Amino acid sequence: MTEIVRVGADEAGLVDAAAHLFDNAVDADARDGFLADSRHHLLMARVEGAVVGFVSGVETIHPDKGTEMLLYELAVAPEHRRHGVGAELVRSLGELATERGCYGMWVLTDDDNGAALATYRSVQPSEESRHVMLTWEPPSRTS
Image (cartoon, rainbow, N blue to C red; front, side, top):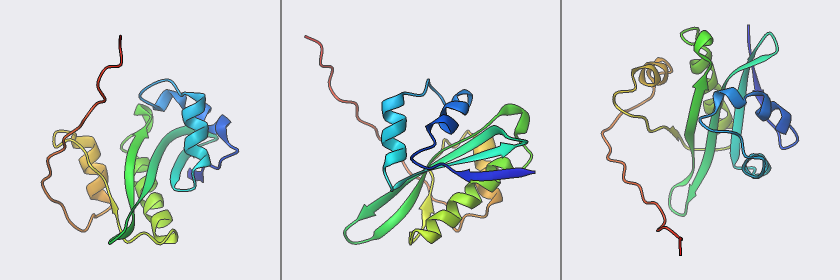
């Protein structure tokens, strides 16, 4: 059975226990800053006490729109994929978004990420659209 845990500001150890699920090494300052911000959310999935997945969400606010939840990242350990863990994490973040008064929740993923798309679609999103993502990086500060 999968247990979903909302990670609190005082639970840095739980994040560290999930280090194998993150793209990069957990940075203590970034971890603590994320957990301390009440508009940043981290939910962990545990099976028999072991952390097997997480979803992170960030509340975004705009003056004329209110607050919505950005599903920032979803990760599930390979051996626990295709068992509903990812979908349960997405549903749980959606429930949290509702509790927090968000008017909606959204995610951006690559169109060739079949696993992510299947997971997100299994939770029945209300609409899909085509977007173009543009990114900026700060100029190099080397002297």
